[in-house]
Structure formats: structure tokens, C-alpha cells
Length: 279
Image: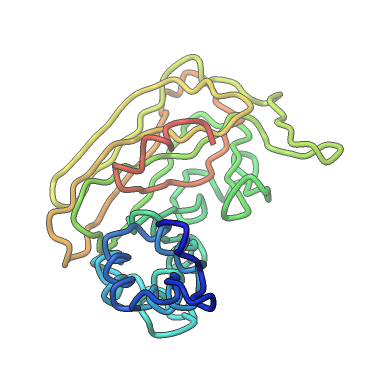
């Protein structure tokens, strides 16, 4: 910018404070949300410019009003589009706390998570088979832990209005029981068995006819892994889409145990690559 440009024009030279607010706002229109937030810290002119609604309208997902309708208890700190973006960029729970929705801070992409308590798990009400255990390892504070069972079946269903695009669905699973010992993160793997005998099947299907399935053997003892179930495409952003997904291992020749089911996660496909890794 040159040696004469400063944050203030008090010395008689040209400073950033002298830039027209409308000009700054127009530049911010072409930036991503994190860049706008960084510039808003420069001075008052930049901060005021960053609040213009026309900057944030294209950065919000097309379904943001639908999302807000599912979050009746959400208190936004203002009616500006910037306030709405900031309010939705943090995970917000709905459906009795069994689901969360948020938008990506850089792209505005819609993301969701469904807790194990929001799924149908065969045998979940019999403590000989499954237990809900509290843990800081989960965004929901609890996971479903399998003691031992012959028949594993975990089913989930979601109806939601997504913006147009391609989305990826994952199961977040662990083998072992997460715990803490001497304030250190630990996994108790004593009860892990049966997963090396036969693969589990992960499946996804949508009401408009899309489907995906895969088979794999679980071997992530002592860690969380986001296992990719499949992708689905949203063509109509104005209508809710019903998605069904499942994890099954129904070979009754052997028992299985030690599985932790945390959640299912749905992300825009362009954000999904980093979530294929252990988290």
C-alpha cells in the first residue's frame, strides 16, 4: 500500500480510515467469510463495512430460513445477515438434542450430525447388549457402546431441506471403550471381538431413489474413524429430502462386542476429504 498509508489520517496523509465504507464493503463481497472477519478487525470503517447485508446474503446457504425454523430456541444477536451467519456457524442442536446443524465458516456449506440416541439400534434397551455411556469424546456427550450381541443393526433416518449440491455421509465409530485414567485419554479394548471375522455393511438410500453401500472390516481399535457410507445429490433445494442409512452385521455365527457408535455426519462433498481421516 505504500509508506504513506496508515490506519489513521491524523498525520495528514492518506490512511485506511479514509477509504469509503461502500468501497470496502464491495471488496468484501468477493471474499470468503473468514477473510471478511479478519478485515473487520482493522478499524471502524472496515468493521462497519463488514456488516452490510449484501455481503452476507450470497454467503448464507439458500436454506438458512428453513434451518432457523428448526431452531426455535436459537437467539441471534441481531437481524443482520452477518449475525445470522455467525449464529449458524456454531453447531446448534435440534430434535430434542439428538441432532446438530451448522454451516462451514469458510464456505457456508450445511453440515449435520445425528447422535446415536437419534438412531434405532437393535437391542439398545437391553443393557446386556448395549449401553449409553457418557464421554467427552462425543459432541453429544454420550455414545452407544456394545457389550456383546449376535445381531448388529443400527438404522438412522433424516428428513431435511438441503441446498443444491453433493453430500457425503459418514458413521463415526470406535472400537473399545473410551475412558480417562489419571486425566489421560485411554481406550479399554478388552471387550473388542468379532469384527475381524466378517465385514459390516454400510448403506445409504434416499427417497428419490439414490443408493450406496459398502462392506468393510472394522480394525480401528483405540481410535475414532469416520467411515464413508456414501454420497447423495440434492437437485431440488426447495423440498426436504428423506435419507435412510444403516450399519449392519447380521451373521449370527459369532458374537461381536466393543463397538462404539457416536454419530452419523453429513457434509458437503467438497468438505468431506479431511473427515475420512481419524478424528
